[in-house]
Length: 350
Image (tube, rainbow, N blue to C red; front, side):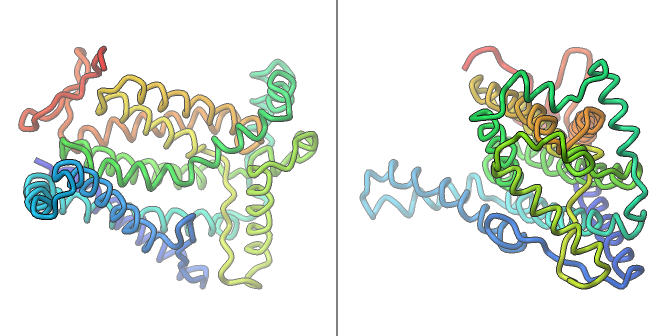
């Protein structure tokens, strides 16, 4: 049932890995595994899945056994047999490995961008002009600063924007480990690798650094928020890479078109909408996406066109991942593969 998802997951990860390796060899660079909030990806993802496994087993075991040791092992065994079967383990293993290869390849290909395309080959001027046209001659960032203010709201938007960093691995682990319908796990994992791959392609098609790097004066009135500190860090990393080899471990992480913050948060919101029944979780997903869009413009991470492109990437990834994992799209909405057990049509009650 999941053969198409197998092929797409492995195919995309293999292609991204090969592209990253070939580009590294051509540039005489080494591939790096960028650290995250829990360390390198090879350690971070297993830690998250292990934590999700613990959260799945421990509360269930303690509650069901009423803290009686003699009853704990049967509960663990029954859960392992019913949920952690061969199909689940295959999904978790394949999803983790393919995402790891795709994401690390994405980070390296993004880092190679200035050397492949040239540091001055960008479309920032054109994208900036589109922004000014859409805002009737005004700067989007200054309009948002005027409407929302530059005090406490800047810190709020900053934390929402940075929430993206743990959201990516946490969401992946959640759908791989806890989705009752196996096809949903394949859907999200496949959509994720597609989104990161399309995002990588967009960086090379329309290279740009974003208004926060191109027009620094627009953001002089903002406090030194965590988002501002991250931007400074990315600027330093870019300068280290552009120094042509003075720091071989440096990673260049600046690229504006398309916005993968918008793409991934929208993808998560769509997956929540169509695979989780609880209504308040739907609201959390959509509000998170909406605030993220505002934050990308407020801090100058992206142009409006970047966000629109990110939305297109999310919709394409969501659709193609759904087809690969056996979901059916028709004029009546969405429904899961006929051999699965649950529907993914949104429900109206909690």
